[in-house]
Length: 559
Image (cartoon, rainbow, N blue to C red; front, side, top):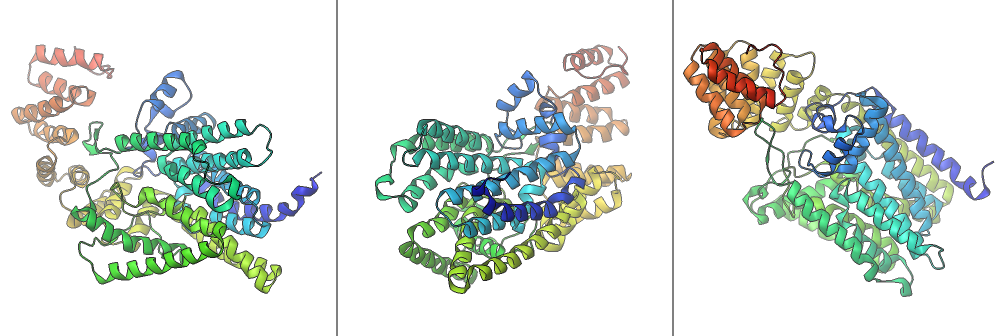
């Protein structure tokens, strides 16, 4: 028996559930993206392969791919417990989280006094917009979904706490604070939320309820701690024995804060275009870097000035409605390169700002209903949501595997190094291995940027696998000039010399790798093999003992 107060909501919620499942059900047949973080987070990360005290300790004391997100790792542990390494199970969790976020948004808007039409339209735009596909169809973006879930839960509990006459208001306050902490332990993108709460009180509550700053201070404290921890985790660092830099921070784009600012103005306009016209979406983008005030920068500034003026007029006429563009502006601040990040723009950067965009869409539907009637508003809304559903359904297909994803990226940004390098890795590192196709993609990436350690190493490996040892050697030599700390590069160079029986050069290369990272068992194995082949029994014995101490497999080694 459905309670009477829930009956008006059953139809819109049922339609939203159906549409979301229609869009995302196909993800259950998708694969892990093995060269796009899914390996670092899940498949090659033994610390998430089941619950144990050691695994839990590890995820709370480690950074992963430049991020501190222990709740993301705990969620992968739960997935592994249920699904093992079936990617469809992990993606099902993503879909459920995304759907939960849409339902929480619907509930929040109703609790804040919005009409059912406004709440339903806003939830529909949030759930079905193609810009959201990246965050849902990519297993590694679990952190974004979790951070949003806990932020919305925190917001809901905060509204209960601030409601006049609410019983157990202190408990709701503590729940709100705890949920916000969980959001930050999933991803730091929600650091703007305390400011959003403060402005919500100012814009959308009664005068006597406004600007209670004291109860926001713990939220601001948590946000500051998360921001500092993120700066630490995103600092460039060498991880593993690959010499790869997993930090998310970079130098100023264009070489200065001014150039970064000029670049971000057209990027913001591109985001606005993508919201209104979500076509041409890609896993990577190639925005132009502007070091001077060029015409596109001026045009972008003028466009943003006009949009800001319209938002101000909305705020002046209806403070609560004007809150939503402010919310979107706050939500996008963490990714506006105030602290420069490696990637300038991404679809996933709009997952949080889409809350404000969706609410504005809902308000537009209400305004249409007042002018043309509620039935006309519902009809227009359904048409728009249907178009978003179809577009998202098509976009989801792009994420089915690494090769499909990077082929799509090359169509959108054919001059982007990352797209060709990603496609090369997809052919090279995913079965079935296609060396000829990988070589072509790596060569195209090399032609765009010839000093990438990742490309040089991968390109060299492909050439060696094809039997072109001279070309592989020259690429490795170039790599080690670019990045002398590339341990795998030194090891591969030593392998070439070893096969050529140039044991002196092989020893030099292996010892350089050993000097850089003596704890790496792969280097110890190579040195043991070298000294065994050259008859240096005592030295070989030393490395045999070290392999044992490092936990390496010695079953096939003589001693």
